[in-house]
Image 1: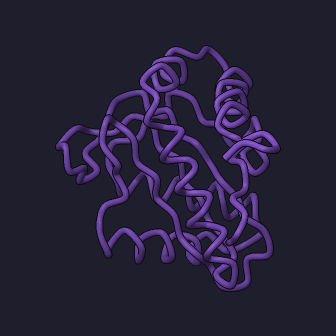
Image 2 (image 1 turned 180 degrees about the vertical axis):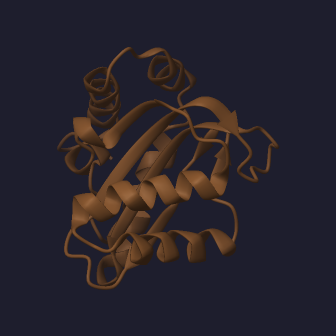
Length: 163
């Protein structure tokens, strides 16, 4: 089974964007593509097309104000991520009809897609914790958000001998 990558291994302080003034889903995907293009060295339009194509398959909003857009990209050598805490929630097509204010965007090498799925599963499980969501929404800095996520990931990681 492919190993999940901890979000905090690919999400650095500069990849956490606080109180971003983004008005809609298209603008969010464009901002994510711009950021991830710079972070990965890929062209912005390549990243945007991959994210947009994936979103056309169905919304990546998972409810409770969270979206997790993601895509596999040919030519990408390592996974990358960006986290947005939005200044104002935006519509994202969530099944619970709630707008989103927390968005975790992941791009992955397309030849390692199973690692993406394992990582998404772990992230979605971690984001079920209401306390974690409240802490992320109240955090005052990028570093604080990363610390909250790192602590949650460490708690979720099984210790040797546990299952």
